[in-house]
Amino acid sequence: MDQNLHTAPAARRTLVPRERIAVSLLFLVNGFMVGCWAPKIPEFAERLQLTKFELGLMILVFGIGSLIMMPLAGAQIARYGSSRVAKVTGVLLLPSLLALTLVQNVWTGAIAIFLFGGFIGAMDVAMNANAVSVERSMRRAIMSSCHAFWSLGGLIGSALGGLLIASWGVLGHSVLATVLAVLVLAAAWPMVLADHPHPSEEKAKSGLPLVPLPWLLGLMALFCMIPEGAVLDWSALYLRQEMSASVALSGFGFAAFSLTMAAMRFAGDLVRDRFGAVKTFRVCTAFAITGMLIAAVAPSAELAIIGFAICGIGISNMVPIAFSAAGNIPGLAPGIGISVVTTMGYSGILVAPSAIGFIAEHTGFSAVFMALPVLLLVVLAFSGLARYADGSGSVSH
Image (cartoon, rainbow, N blue to C red; front, side):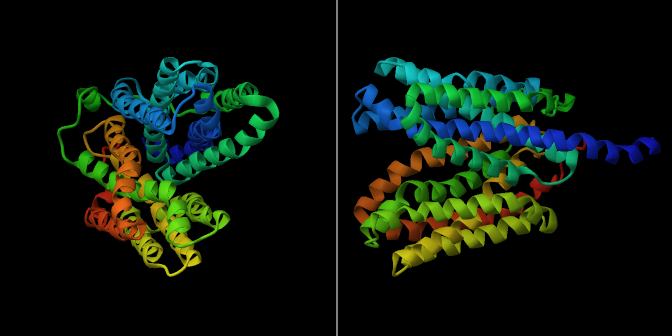
């Protein structure tokens, strides 16, 4: 027994890095596919002759697909383990870009975008659950850097997308993007941590959890991602209309937010390992509140952009910590907890844009950005729950 304990760390040093690379590649592929979709949207709308309202409905169908498939993925993870579900959903996701490129009418387009959103969401749950398993095996935080790889994949996909569409056409872009995704998934495939459901978790194979903890963590993720969605969808319009920024300058609000978010996600695991999840979460929340308030009351566009950058520092590691906590709820299968948190969190990004747009039409964006820190104060009140991200109270496997 003692000999096994002494040799275990050495085995972990040789094996776990491969598993960490694998789950990072899963996040990269998922983000890359989403990034590749973004520059295809105008051509997709033109090909199907969609009005702005109809395109909005199509994007809503994408979100509905994700929200439906996420809980289903959680149930399958509890039954089969995250590695198998991540691989299967990854394979199902691969032909989605080609399908979206080849559809010729609204109904087939709606089916294709529903499945695209569904497989993106299902894979999202599975790879987050796998990241929790790798965290447990490594006994250190990796979730923030995994989310950083997702952001990196999205950046690569969106940056290359426009160039490839211009030079190769939409079909050429889809084929090349699919080939690249296949290669990355193939590289990750043999290294993915093969986790299996624990016997005590068999009772959680299906159905929604009846304990309040995953729902409270889901509420935290929701209130973290609503401000993220607000910056994503409305920061440019806010800077342009209310700050009188130029067209070029108005795009820097989300760019600054994204830059600090990606940078801090790569650094977030080291910070969390050093200070613990609760302290990291609270400091991040304070940064997010401060940044959002600066953006709301800034007298100039430049200062508002600085505010969005500070907000990005804060938001960056709040959601990854919530996901880690959800995967370490005692007595609950990781896939179930994470499916609840991801579903609730991403529904904030889905619902927030239209609601914020409606409110801002009557109050202005400054008032909206001033109100959003109230949600973050609620998150701060529940920040003690972030202790589960450190494995507090989790069953040792």
